[in-house]
Image 1 (tube, rainbow, N blue to C red):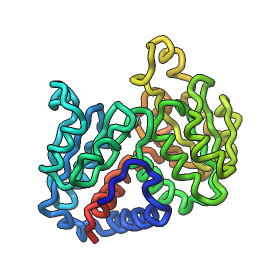
Image 2: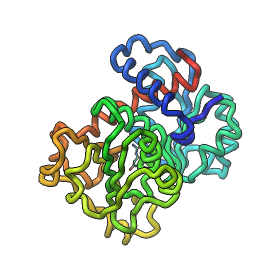
Image 3: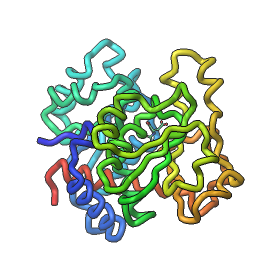
Image 4: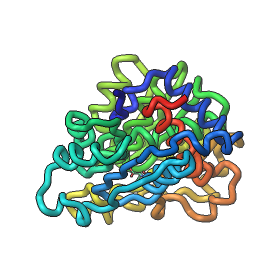
Length: 304
Ligand code: NCD
C-alpha cells in the first residue's frame, strides 16, 4: 500500500505519469466517470479548507465514487480527546482512501501507521502540502510546457507556508531550476528546506526582500499568504501581513510569459486588478487541483 505524505514519496517519473493522466482527464473527462465506482474517500480535516477538501471531494465524485468525512475538528471525536491514530484506525475501516489535514506537523505520517488504506497528506501544520504541489506542477507544466531551466520566485511567508516547502522540494529535482526567495527577514525559508533540498545538490538560490528588483528575472512568481494562524502574536502578523502586494504597476517589468501562481486563499497579497492579466494563473491552478487529485486517487487505489 502506498501513501502520499511528502512530495518526495513520488519519483519524478511517477509525477510525470500523474501529470499525463491529469491532462488526459481534462481532455476526456467522460472516460473517467466510472473509475472509482463503489469506492469511498474519507476527508478528515482538522483544520479549515475550501479548495483542498472540496477538490478532493469533487475529484472522487467525478470518478463515480462517494465521499464522507468532517471539515472541522470540533465536529469530530477529536473534540472528546480521541487521538489521530485511533480516529484513523476506525475510519480506515469505513473508507478506501483517506485525505487528512491537521495543524500538527507529522500527524498524517502517524496516521499511516494505523491505517488499513492509503493516506494522503492534505497539509500538516507549516510542514508539507504535497497535493498542492502536484496542483502547482500540473499548472506550471500546462502553462509553460516544461520545468527545466525555470527561475522560480517564491514570495511572502516562506517560513510557515507549507506549499512553498513542498514546491521547492519538487522543483529542485529538475535540471537548471533556480530559486529566488523573496520575504521579510522574519519569514525567510526555514533551514530544514535548504539543508534537505537545496544545499546538498548545489541548487542555485538567492534571498531578497525586494520583489520589484528581481521581477524581470522570473519565469514563475509564486505568491503566498502570510499564515496568520501560525503566528505566536497578532502584532507580528499585523506588521508583516502587507509586506508584498502585487499590482499591475509592479508587473510592468515582468516577462511577457511569466506566470503568477498562488495556492489561494488570497488576502491582500495580489490586487484583484491583476486577475485579468493573462499571466495570472491562480484560478486556472485551483481548477487543476481537482484533475490532479483524480489522477492521484486512481493511482493510490491501483486503478488503471
Ligand atoms: C494553502 C494551505 O492550506 O496551505 N491553501 C491551499 O491548500 N490551497 C495555502 C494557504 O492556506 O495559505
